[in-house]
Length: 364
Image (tube, rainbow, N blue to C red; front, side):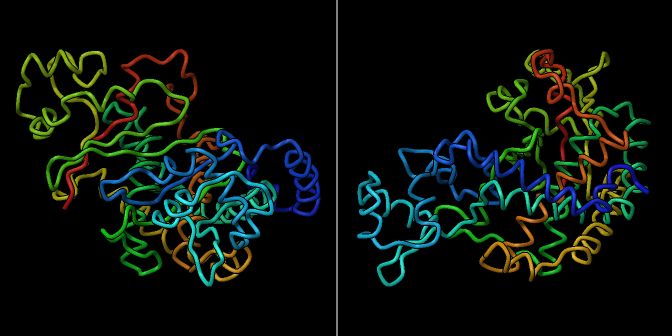
């Protein structure tokens, strides 16, 4: 049996130990400390503040925790929580709470230590069943990157482009995840849970063109991608064709990031979906299998009821994120991929290691 999945055979013992350790952790966890929460936003900002900016301000986190099961203002006041009415108005405007018949209730999922342990136990089990179905395709993608001397980009492309990128379009096409709209301050799903995973990472993309985006994978620990926002990323887009020599100013600006070889060719991977290049084809094979496998191996209705998610779309979004990270852990455990240096040893990483986290996508 798969070593990383042996826990399934010891589920009773593991869950007992899990309950003991999470119970102890719950006793020492300060839920009002924002640093103890992992917050995730599958969303678009619509030119507004990120929801986490609102949650982490003042004592808004404490208000959301108190209102998780719903309270009137009189009940809230009886708890002697310090707040002003404008905080409630702001949280309501940002769709972080709703008000019905005088009762204020948190409208986003907040999973405490016990709930987080439980859903992650379920996600690990699902990931172990899904992994064998996509392993070959993941290995093929990594081998291809190796043939292009970009093996170090395997983690970020599998995570940011495939598992946390293309898959969402697949889910939307299948109608299991709702599409974002452009109304309100933000659109999508936002939630937080505790404790944080050891590698807490995400993806960002910058685009000034309709069909070309510069993407990078980041984590809270790494220190090499922060300066990318200040760079002239637009200057990189004409270079994706491969036959344009960059200006000296462009080379100098990105020299420390290792984006060019000695012949001044752009070295970070370019995924051209219009031309169906090899990276795109290999990635599509993974998502085609992954979307079907995830839905087959996930009890969406049961999960929705257990954690009181608002609908099946939110359930898929939250649970898939946990499965996604577990799949990445399995890929690392199987030595299919390795953590980027910037994630594994952030203190030793240099700006050149940022190239391992970056890629460009030309979309259809």
